[in-house]
Length: 293
Image (tube, rainbow, N blue to C red):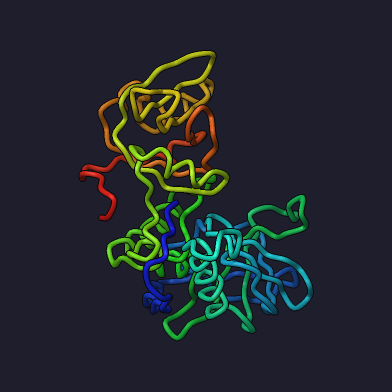
């Protein structure tokens, strides 16, 4: 992702919550006590149980620690690292801006968590959807972070209704050129600039371009964005996963000539590449793709 630094950071105003006036579902904690309600429009952004706590500290744009010591990572979003780039690299500022935005939302406040799994991950973290109470009603933290342009939706498998809800928040930020979508950080990398894409190696990125060809070899489908395969940006898809794309109405062989945006982690495979495992990682775009939208 491109996170260039052109002007000082300014805190973007959080977009007003879209939850006001929406009917809610009651959540209950392990003791059976009523917790914060979840609006029906985001009922699929939930887990099987409910946990209440208070946020003692924020670690980065998607991680926090509760007062009881448990670490929580917000599900379904990706955020820039806090400080792993050089002093003149916008990634540092973008990561700090995401952390500051999350602090303004949750630090020192009670929170209701809906974990996506019954147990913590291998690092001992709870992966969860998080809800807070705002003057406008009960709010999904992930949605607020996306609406401010501080984070991106993750391509992990989540309920379709939840994905649509989160993508809508991202589109709002994108239309308003907020956060990562603004001139200071403009998040989209262009496939026809492979050196720039490769500069994001090891990071989550959004890459846009026109598909030049689709080839298959050794059980892998290669979606090529240039004629020089050894240098151009490439999307790789395991042949055994092709049925997932077909089931979603996406025929891989017909991607050639289409303009798309691809989300995922950039790696080097004789040039920059992103391994795509789910159809949600590829989005068709009709507009011309330029360095700035």
